[in-house]
Image (cartoon, rainbow, N blue to C red):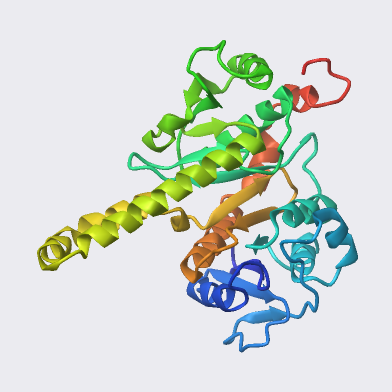
Length: 334
């Protein structure tokens, strides 16, 4: 692009807003990325662009009601900037349900997309993979999972630069007959999808990079992602504590520091900062509520990369017409 990529950042979303959000935006700001802070800051934005929004949607608000009632909230105004072409993407560490509601209301779904889905990058020692859906749809139908798989494949190709990504369905066993009614029916659709579908995958193999794209409903995905992220954080904390436990281990820790840094970069969820809400006409990134400034900066960079790689346009162009048709209510396939 001939100008910097403009990212509307909900400065009031997150546990440590606005301080952590502003600090992260400052880290991400560059000649290529222009964060636009949205909210009632109360502190110096330190030269960053700032759009005033005098309302806040908090974690306890009911998403759909709050988005309509609080039209001057930082989260809603940030989405409006994207819808009006004044920003290229939106990032928020605020209420996930409100992000989904605002996206549906203001950015709207891509043609033929029945349900937007959250795609998150799962770090592993063998390389990153994509899990979709990570929480947008607690209830899903097989035909929705088929769409998620196609969107996840585009994500893996464009952002992770994986050619013909290997797609697996998250289940309780590798055998095709394992799983609940949703998984068994989705398995049949994915097998005939034309994707590089490799069958079912068990959750114990998520950190072993069992697939480039892991597909599931949002309820299952949210539990899986939080379990993986919690495990990774606990492991990194344990390694850090062990490396500083006594003079001898501290000396050994100094020798291991480069390797430990590499492990941290591979496993720390904050390395990517958030997940894309895919299936909308505009790009949205959902960050963790407890995001550190580093995580916020990475979420902004992730959003900018999605804009640069035209993820929204790629999904619109590459979603097969038969998959779009399969999501129509008139279709009998469940």
